[in-house]
Image 1 (cartoon, rainbow, N blue to C red):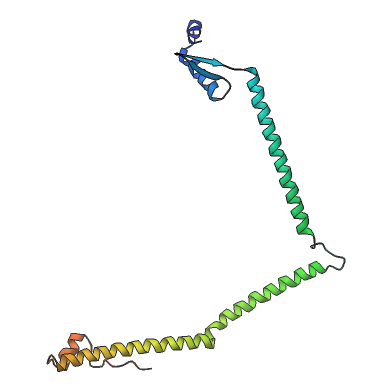
Image 2 (tube, rainbow, N blue to C red; image 1 turned 30 degrees about the vertical axis):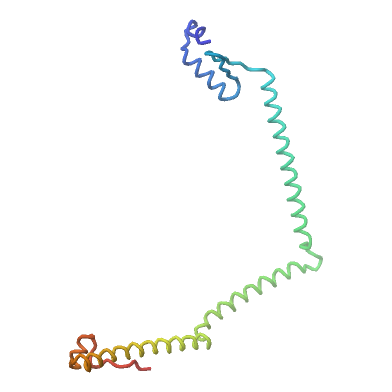
Length: 176
């Protein structure tokens, strides 16, 4: 083909590019036999590919119909029991539900605002305060023990020990 194309005045590379594009699109088959490449196409192959695509499309349509039928049956099941009766009971119940949910939200908001005065919260806060006070007293004891050690065992004056521990003469246990 390339030789005939060059005789006809067409670039040989153009023919090779077009043949490769046809092979890539599966419109033409390519076989290498020996040192030559042979390009061919069977008329029945095109029909076979179209038949396969048609069958795949039919299968996908059937699957979609099945899904639609399932969805319709689920919708019908969901609608059962939700029909409006002659007295309008359903709409009354839905209105009452909306009203009760508003009341619940309001009660939850009020509970949240009253939480800060809750006796349990206050008791927990008191326990936490007592724990912190005990810890502060423990550390104050430790500092006084260090000061006592420095004055009795090391022979420092009380002012020197206070300066070394970086405390003032007003340093004392915390008050309530």
